[in-house]
Image 1 (cartoon, one colour):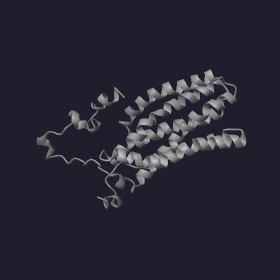
Image 2 (cartoon, one colour):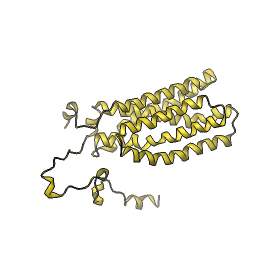
Image 3 (cartoon, helix red, strand yellow):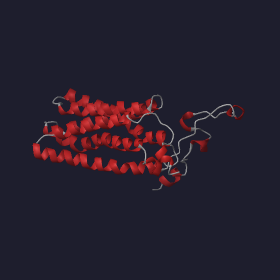
Image 4 (cartoon, one colour):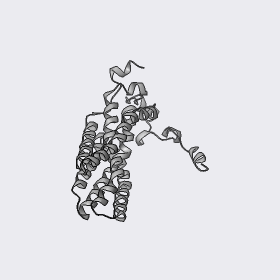
Length: 241
């Protein structure tokens, strides 16, 4: 509480406040600007955004991918201890994919600036889908740590699945658009761990629920591929201007 307020005074909402430009773009000299046609920055409102196909693809894609993380964090300990691993070993596994995830987040941001962001999100999300399938067959330590490596490496999508809203909808109403997309996302994040727990009670195994979550993550990753290139306001969104 003591530190948060003064530090918040240092935060700026626009790179222009620092004399910088979005995504490292350099300013165009005034004498040359008349000869160049610059593509206008996207400036969606949240009402315009929710009328687009891209908004819903992102919302459900992000939710499906994030459901993997929530489900794993809730059920990984019980699953591994049921297989005879100690709580200390579970702690090492969680520490491993957390540490790898920190590095992957930095790498993900770098990659997301250099390739189409939808491809980057897809690649990282597929790694986490693969990690869950590995976990289902992880009955020895090398397989368990292979799961940790893949799960941590897939965390590169974390920052990208948030930043992609800015790429497609601009900065004008980024927070509102993100908040609206959290509604369907939170339904998935709430339901997935409960589903896994229910199926374990009914079947005594995580096989069905973890397979469903992994396939759901792969589906979510595929939804990002369907976004296409960022473009101007579609006709149906322009009517709300």
